[in-house]
Image (tube, rainbow, N blue to C red; front, side):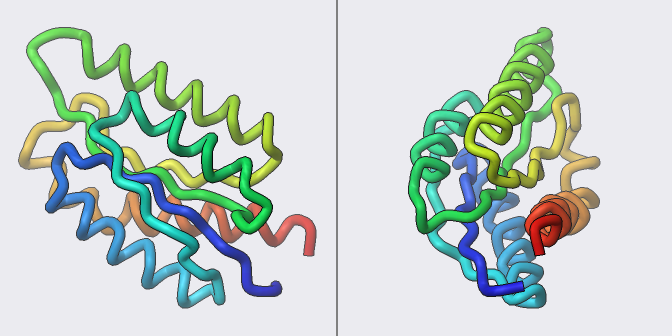
Length: 137
């Protein structure tokens, strides 16, 4: 596979956790000869689809990875937001026909569950992109 460029959209909420996810994702990108195009930090999950659309419009971007955390709250807000964000991401993937790896921990996780999910969620999001990019090879 020729070197492809991947944008990362990252939520600032839980920034230290997401930084660890970015480091893992970047390592997996390098293992698969993919280049990191840019990292775009957004305030939270609801802003991810808009930033994602910006990058998917660029010819230089071949794929994207969306990283973040939606923790368990006292209301249904996180679950509703999580479903809305994932649906928007999936719609953008089909609209632009570019692979998007979703590495959003949650919704509904508590602090104890977040740490154990950092590496697998970041790794699996990139591996999904790798797999989909290789479809056309």
